[in-house]
Length: 201
Image 1 (cartoon, rainbow, N blue to C red):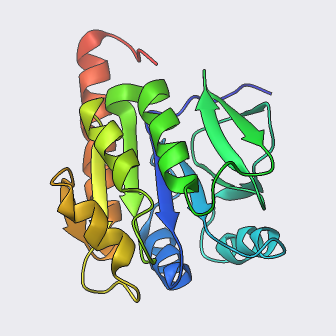
Image 2 (image 1 turned 90 degrees about the horizontal axis):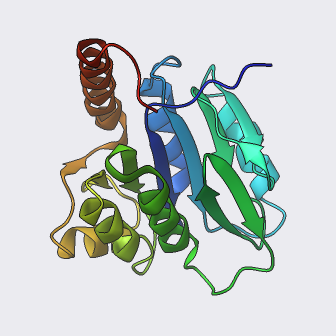
């Protein structure tokens, strides 16, 4: 089967209160953006597989629980497994378990995403306590990528407010408003690729 490389890889981090944000985001998101989506959630060990199942009810994209050596493909969603850290290297997901630190999974993945995808990395921080994702968003911005944080609609404001406090967030929006900006990014990418005479990915 041919692997369809994504034009962008979008990391989405959340903790407490994140489920409704995920649902609103994916319900508003077309299934053919050409992007890949990686969901990094702070959940109890038995909840991650349920998250993949729940998200599959709110999107037409394929939703998979991430495993090592899994190639990231366009228009698919990957969910971090329990008690693990997740990395992106050369278009491939790497899972390490047990996790290195408690509630640092978003920063860890975002940092690897910035290194792997550069200007085609996207970080989104949804509802949650504390500040996971803030450092990772800084890494993404430093690599030329794009960052989003949830607005006042966040059920728990700690994570998005911490990300915003870094000064490196490009857009502060409700989850259902973010897909429109992603569609604009995808369109610009396609138009630029056509000007170049092909995709450089």
